Length: 447
Image (cartoon, rainbow, N blue to C red; front, side, top):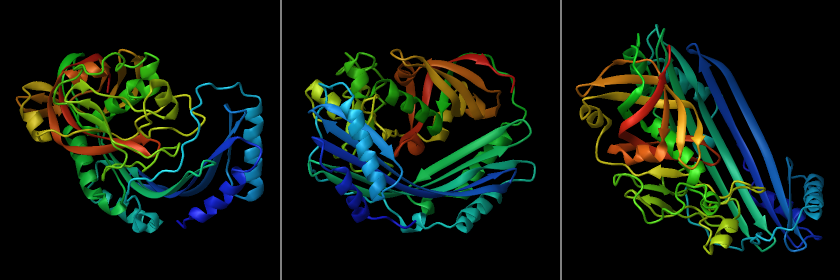
């Protein structure tokens, strides 16, 4: 990927921050990346995409706000985007909660870029696939992908605000598919060189082999070991269900009225830290506020939620640097959640369990009750019975219906290794395995 560079974005910003408005904010992205997919143990798709996006927020009459988006930094296109934003602002009702634009700021240092990842060729991704396939026996099919991306983010405001960052990311997902079982492993890092693709493939294959001819299992409440990918599902839903300032102020959050109270097991500490060395975030949010580390749950106690400029103004707080791109109806969200690790290996968590289930990951997960944080979904790609401290056999998948906060109140052990899962915009959640008692499965499946 060839970077456009901050000067190229500045040229567009000079136009977008033009006359005829009280204030304006420009948010622009340049993203490029390659994706190599494989299925049936062979590469079947290689793609390359490169996109440019620009969003202009125009403010007129003090607090009438319009936002328009475009896909070009060419002068005429930027002028058209600005004019569209002004036209929208002119017919938009006044917003008394508009907090104004952020001013200039300094941002925390962050090493987010890797040349080798940005310059990865299709042949290099194909080599990674080949190394994964070497771990597969002939009777198990391989599927998955290796992806590399590079990004530029630029923010400019009529207040003099300027923020610019470059970042890279590499991800690998591997599925092992046997006749009646499957296994899964994934990893996401800043650098392609940090991905150990053969190890991921080996993990997926072992799960598929152990899970052959899965046994029936009755629904009910079980002690479960949730591997990091499954733990991350709980974290990511909690991000949307209550770790943001808007839900908190509106009384929809499970954190509302609970600050200072113990709501989870003491072993659980959850933070949002966009600029941790192993995080995938940025040193600023999409309003141009510096990113900051926020402790949400401290040893089981509800401590805080994250704030953007609008919710912080309402609450009499300062923004924590968690604003989303405008127009934003969701309020602030923590996009880089992490559960702090414990002191037990996955093997020790299993060994301490007389009878239970190990869950590799969830899918088709959704919300049943927002305030009560009740979720439902399915197990997938490796669900195993635990007997006498050992993985005994694969079992058929189950549907869970479980209060997520209650699950984190019933934690009996926390793994000592964290892994990143990402389904979020410029972010991801990093979590360990956890041992949870009385995790509720509401129905069984036929496979």
